[in-house]
Image (cartoon, rainbow, N blue to C red; front, side, top):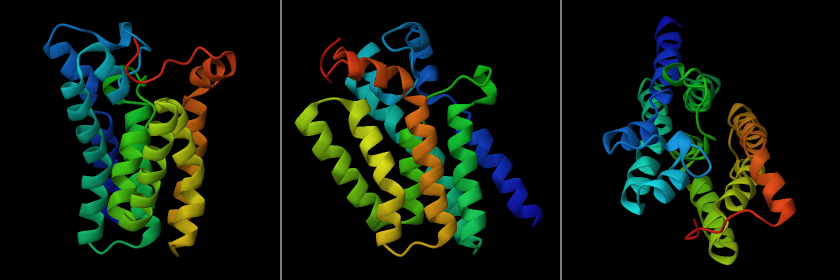
Length: 195
């Protein structure tokens, strides 16, 4: 029990490490003041460059993947693993190190689900890619994959705590995209490659 609580706390702290913000600071740019103001991979790619965007994506995904993988190796039950995954995700969205103002959690959720349910995550990543390819709107792709997550997890026979995690991810990711939703409705949401 104590080990589980410690790992949940560590997952939150790891999730709180603002990868995109730190990459921006390294080149003298505060990504919170550029583009959408988000610290995630899409805004980093727009503000600094695609290479840094890819690094941010990998780093943010690792924040979800690594603590869950540690829990799997410690043979934790699905409920504990879901708790660890949720903690890393919440850490990214509400980071201790940035006054609780973080990203949207998509990459961190992806990393956690990759550790928990690799095949289901592959389906979700494919769905994301298809929507991104056809629309070139990253926010639409992210929300589509997030909303599909609990149902895809159910189709892949994941245990109830993991399906519940999918619903939690979906709700919070859509909530964090409220500005994007407004721009989608207005027809002003930028397509990838546009500034």
